[in-house]
Length: 195
Image (cartoon, rainbow, N blue to C red; front, side, top):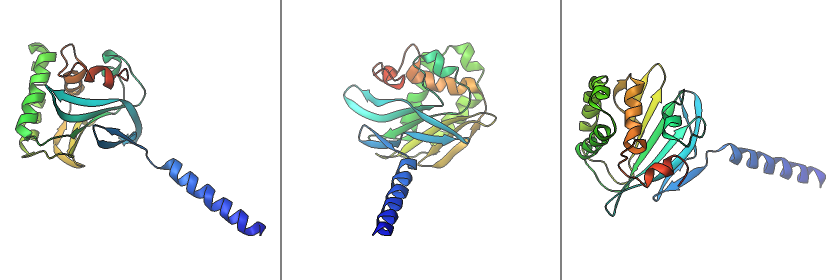
């Protein structure tokens, strides 16, 4: 009898430990995202998440992952080490539409002198979106900052384009949502963990 109880207890403990090690998911706009991710061998946690709404249409879910919580734009932009933001499409959108929206957000939140420093990356970024003919509902785009590699993009886990080396370019991307003129003023505090 004692042996059966011990075996049952050990099996239960193994199951509990196995589940504890599995990544948990958060739901944002009906899409599931991991609550932790590994980028360049470092574990990142959700800093904040929300849904981008344009007029009344839900466009995408967004999750910002950082090594540690930051509740200011400056804190996020000054973060050392790897970072990630993930966009989950909530409607169909062409790569061209997405690329144009990103460019408009970068232009609104950076000045010409700043943009001139990463003009090559802007062109490369635009080309990457040409490779996404149609984003479908549920598609996930990840954009990682990997030190010594650069900005790395993927669609549903498949790389898009080449790494873009300048950290200032990655920060310009983040300013689309976290800058002085964010594309969605209700999303900014959510990504900073205040919403």
